[in-house]
Image (cartoon, rainbow, N blue to C red; front, side, top):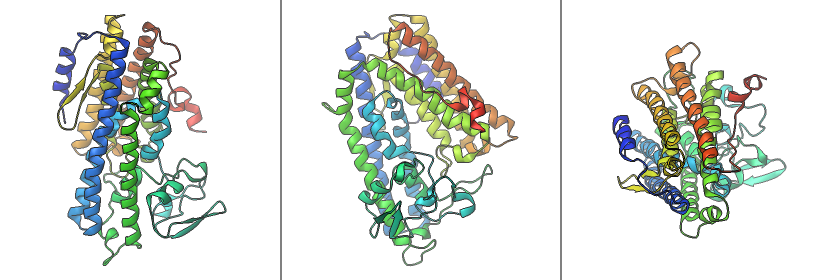
Length: 414
């Protein structure tokens, strides 16, 4: 499903406003793309589970690498579904189970205490893998056997969002380990022997395998829930019927573009030059997460999603709806999204050429900082035209989430 920017731009040129922009039809396309994205995410999570099972059964460099490759593949369709967040209440309620970040990884497993602590979180070094029982705020958590239910109890424990025990990033940490390289080259470097019960490094290798297996099982169960939400009669579709689906759609596009991606995921890290603020920080996969978030926004706007098997889900779109009211604005917004994809593609290609996103963040890396800033500016520009499209469409109730890193920079350093 990898597509070059040239092919991408050509596709944009041939998919003009040829489809009638009936609101019900646009809503149908929107929901069908959501369902397809979550179905693809579920398919690749199941492939990840097979790779994880092989790693736990026979730990080796090869099986660990295969599990990492499966995790990276699983992120591609999932990141494209993030455009359905923010405006859809059922997705907002669900999403934190699978993609919460950043996390205090010392809650899960051993870390370098110089780099893994958090004075604001008393559980930042709790290490559930090393502790079969754990007293948490007067309650004893029995983790003698690490199961999906145990992880659900541990996740965001005590209302602390950094206590991330489930989802993609918990699995990522277990596969890669801490990235202790700062803004120098290199990702996490967990050895396969951390899962080898006969030649164990890191201690508690049986429990580490239990955790990885339970977290992957839970990811599959959660993605099954997401597929159910968007299937016929599912709660997400019920929510669309009960509210204004276009308000939900544009809220998602604006909030992901601006406050979440441009702000919290990109500008904050750039202001602080802090690799702990990159989205996939253990694996150095942040360039892909940013790219596919951007593509997900474009998918929703154009009403077109390319599935992992190469088939295409498409239909009447938000682009068509806006174009019937203001063709120039619809095209300008599409051009903005294309510029965003080019800017995100430049980050992606730079990372693939050997300079990881955390290196681009480094203080003094003017070229890397400029790549990130260019993408931020493109995301902000497209948000301004998203807001104009909302006005042209006559939609009420669209609220675009902000970020201190964009709107109140001084607060970032307080």
